[in-house]
View (tube, rainbow, N blue to C red):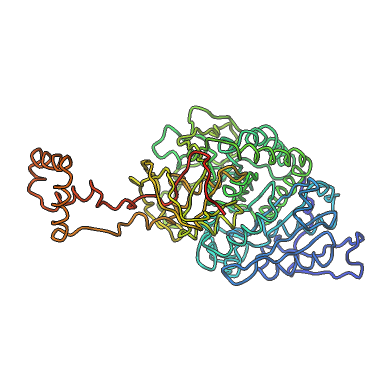
Length: 601
């Protein structure tokens, strides 16, 4: 569909029209006027004022204030409902789908903020009969997610920006990247978003972004869910129906889109730094990202990436067009989307195996048309030194490989229950926030459980959002009897949100709670032995355990270096006997694999 505002330049100031005929369908003039044609994006307070004016003008719109953000300001949700129903429960009961759009997660990428405002104005005014796309769908918009970053405005925040004249800062009020915080919830923003998300339970989700990656002829690219990482019902619907229709309809308009341009050449050692001519790849959005998080709850989550090197007007309008096409698709396929989510949720509640990690299958790919620019070593106009770059005088169009197939590398069989000691209250709080059903033990009891021991892991070299993330985690399993106490939590793994449960609690999950350091105290030893003080107990233990003593003596005979090392010998006794700290490196969350009767409240 063509952008419907191409001939309407923005004005210098935000203009608000007040009508005596408010809440009628006779309004013909814009209620708000934006200034993106002149490279100006509104500040946070202006954005909220404009949404409030729309809500005051139209009965089909409502601006809802939710919990606070790290900046101390509330997070807002703007809802457009054609039949004026603003209750998520009754909306779902009527079989309507919900499309949720999130803007300003990185306020230096404000295209979606302007586009959503303009679209809200236009659909409420029913320009080009846009309201027809609200027959089966309710549209929800988070005006500005990163409020603290939006309040921190400057011309100098994004080094690749030529426009707009001012925009916000990537970090939030705690200097955290909110698009790395959706599962760990270190910020009030994320806590409030989670509240909104689970209250409205959207079927389709869009997060609007801007990228300064490779240069090409497209104003906008799309990060879609990776089909191999989804339930097959959703994966097939995405690849066979949703993406072909979205790509085709955008191509009919002014802003053709393609998948996000992430160069990849399997024959190169530095494959991710190669030219797009060699190929591009899709990648799996893990749970720390907004679109990855939403997929844990069987919601189709997308990201648009507007191209920073294009004009701000075109960036806003391409975001506008995609929002429009996504709403059209969601409305037209509402019944199928609604039924798919219901069916997927039911099947996941019964699913046994869950894929925690995947690897790219480089033997499979599709060909797509790509419109790029010749790239190579060019002389820098700043330093005079050659650097890699794109020659905008040399556009090209050619078929390239698109790698979009992944294979599972770590499959976990779900347990019947996870047991979470109440001491780990940060985990319990996040499970409650995400509406996970839990029960508590009604009395102190000993349970036979499957445990993990953390054998090995690597930490990311750089700190990531205030954490040192654990990667390449290796574990060993054991079965033990452990004492639990009244109030400890039991999570039955038979829920629609099983993906969230498993991916948060399994220690090898790439964005689980162990990866994000929530369980790091289990990696520290609290007991120890001294070379002098342990001597008497070590001797008694050897005398009381003759078989072990014989093994100990044999090791001394076979290993002369060990035989000469007092500390090593005591350590051998300590770590191979009951003196060893059994909880050291034992992962606190345990598994019960059988459906046994548990004493629960």
